[in-house]
Image (cartoon, rainbow, N blue to C red):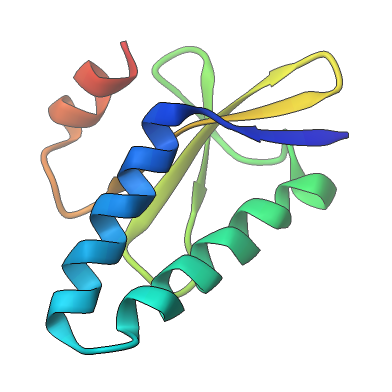
Length: 97
């Protein structure tokens, strides 16, 4: 099983890093470490999460208020978005569509 982080999800991670790094020096690095650990856990726990918007699985981060949306394609887990749960759910749906 492979994990592929799509460019849209990479951009989400960069934005989250910037936000948390402005809050406190080093917090952005902790954010990335945590989110990448969550993403790595998909190797074991893929497809066990609830499905949203008819086609995306959603994993909630353990430490930050972020949701990781992913799809399964054969032997690949495609991370499509990493979105802040504090934002409007409609904006998440729009971003994923």
